[in-house]
Each structure stands twice: as structure tokens, then as C-alpha cells.
Amino acid sequence: MAEGLDVFEEVLPKLLKLQLFHDFKADDENDCRILKMVYEQLKVETFKAGSEIIKEGEKGESFYILTAGEVQVLRNTMAGDKIALANLTAEMGIFFGETALISTDTRGATVVAVTDCRTCTLTGKKFKELCEKEPVLGYRVMLCLAKRMSATIKKTNSDMATLYEALFDEVVN
Image (cartoon, rainbow, N blue to C red):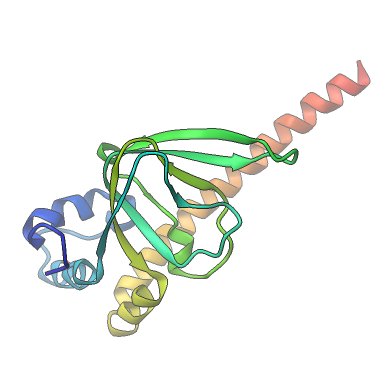
């Protein structure tokens, strides 16, 4: 059992609610076996209200599942000001820092605990070790991450086109 976590049978429904593991089925013996391997690698971390869980620009090594509390996602503007992008709660089935599962790129945003928070954390190193043992885990999670990143790129492109049009209209008029 992963230290500080409930028993696997209580954690399994929470894992299955996460977008990252939505392809896994509770009634599939192999899926449950794979998710139990993930569960056994999770580490519980707690964060006091106001503390930074991840910081924009820093190297990312861990993926976080928010299991209790509320966080705020912030980004720096070009002028160096922080803007709030979203407030998210554990009840929403939230995870963040998922890029750390596949690389150690720099963080694209800051995540701050609004309330006292609890997360389950998995390092990219442990995830890659799991994928070596269970390639189906890597395939399914990577497919989910690729879809998620594709949707983000599409939205970003749409937002950029909207801003470009607004700027063009402002300059022309």
C-alpha cells in the first residue's frame, strides 16, 4: 500500500475519474492490476494554504493529483505580473504537472494552494519505470496526454487568431 493513502479499493474509483486514466475499467482485472502498480508508487504530500505546489519556469519532475483542497493556477505576463487562470478543487478530478511524466521541461504555470491541500504525487522517473514493465500504461496515458495537449494547442491557436483580429481591427480603424 502507498504510504498515507487509503486502501487501493477506495482509491481506485478516484483514479478512474481522472481524465488520464479514463480508458481503464474497474471490472477489467488487467486494468486494475496496472492501476494498483500506479497506486503503489504514489506519494502523499500536503501543502499549507498559500504555498506554491509548482512554480512557473522551474524544472518539472512530478505529476500531482489533487485529492483535497483548492488550488489556483497562475501565469506570468510579459510584464512580469501574475494573472489567475483558474481556481480548481479536488472534487473536479484535477491533476496538474502531467508533462513531468514524459519530460523535465520547465513548468508553464504556477499552482498555489488556496486552502490546505493534499496531493498524490508520481515522479516522471517512477512513471517511466512503470511503463517499462507495463507498456499498455504508457500507451494509454501518452494517448490521453497527446489528446489533451492537442486540444490546448487548438485553443491557443484560436485565442491567438482572435487577438490578432482584434489588434488588426484596432490598428486599421
